[in-house]
Amino acid sequence: RVFLHPVRQHEGRKGPTAMSGTAKSNYVQTFGKKKNAIAVAFVKQGRGLLKVNGVPIEHVEPDILRFKLYEPVLLLGRERFNVVDIRVRVTGGGHTAQIYAVRQAIAKGIVSYYQKYIDEQQKREIKETLLTFDRSMLVADPRRCESKKFGGGGARARYQKSYR
Image 1 (tube, rainbow, N blue to C red):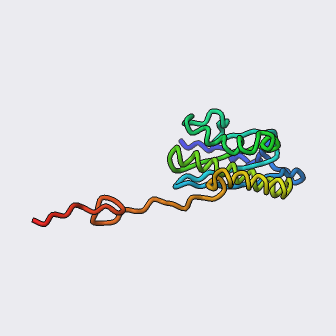
Image 2: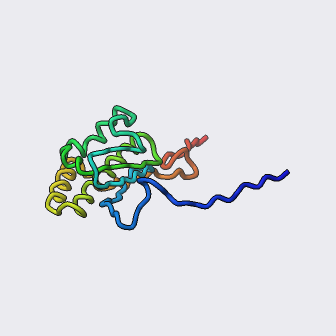
Image 3: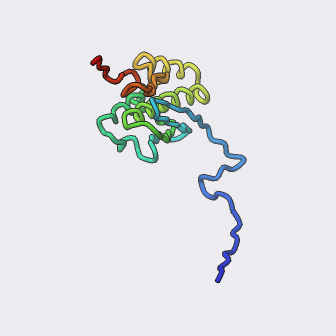
């Protein structure tokens, strides 16, 4: 026997995720990179929400590196983050690289949000504060892993040579 299922009509998205033509929210999308980890931050007008892959920033693992995620917040003050919601998606790399990528995405996101929607003077102050603390918060680290070559065990190491 062959069962035929009725074809369902696609009704589109419903609820708060649906974008209507009249409502336009203020948001910016920025990214952070470290080695093979890529983090994309979605910064929009809100009430101070900070989430990484759907998890609040307070519960991000590993807990030893959690302080690195707090750095932009601690440097700029919580009041600057109370006007925005930041949601970050991160993929690739290891634990440490992901933490550094998220940290960079958050810092770049707050700078570009202030530039686009608030004012240039505050954006300059924020950028100056972040750059004086650690340049890697706004500027990506270009170092990458060098590939292995033939004739050796790694990128630069060669196999041991014997003369007799």
